[in-house]
Length: 333
Ligand code: SF4
Ligand code: FES
Image (cartoon, rainbow, N blue to C red; front, side, top):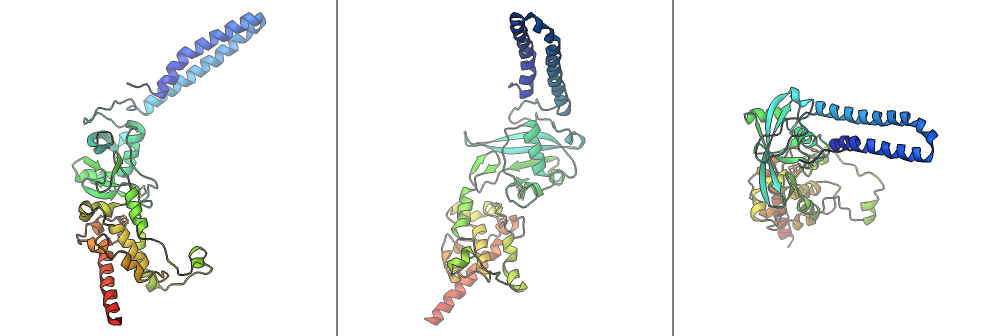
């Protein structure tokens, strides 16, 4: 078992302090017998340092009693070590962890004591802090804004920071199964690699397009919009880029080049923004099998979205707009 830093500090001080004392005593005695009178003061300082280190160690082990639990794969050997959580309800959190070396998954269970307000993300952070610091996950804001903590809990794609642990534990008979999103490459444990996802988002130019370059970078005056104009795109602007819709999409697995529901919902969002001047070019950019025509309208993306964005509807409306624009062009011809 690896020694903790507190063990190293304590045992180090037990050997190091007397040794240091002895060397100082010897040096002082050899240089000046009068300096020998300082020894009691030095002794008090050294004993004080030793007592503080020991007291800190005792406090830490009484406050975090499980902090020395050993990790054995596949067994519920982890007891909760967080002082607040020992008062709550016991929950087993089984985490499907991706091993980047073996490219396989390990299922490791942790015993955790939850209160009514504990979120899945809060429990995972506690587990990482007090039971097993090898656990890796993505998170940031802890309040449903950044979109970083997306994962699958009891088979359902969720934002972990918005998911109440007790609710999912009750639904799972005291067991909470946590696994990573499998529609994205994985880095480690439950942390996905969203590089491709962000690249797909960027590929559809998800920014307002203005004809004049000067307006693009230095808008001189606000461009007013009516409420109706805002309502057309507002629901699609709530996208957090959490990646859950792409994870839920069955097409992405068979057609990895499909740009996906998140990016397409953003095409619709900017196409419907009255300030955007890209017009039909936005539509033609996704007029392909990797664009809107790749969608088979399973609707799972919209069900997975934690923010109520409806990518499936956006894609069907893009298809409709494309059909309409082709018909209009035919008339002109
Ligand atoms: S559309 Fe919804 S599910 Fe998809 S990335 Fe945006 S917030 Fe997440
Ligand atoms: S941590 Fe930001 S959305 Fe969950």
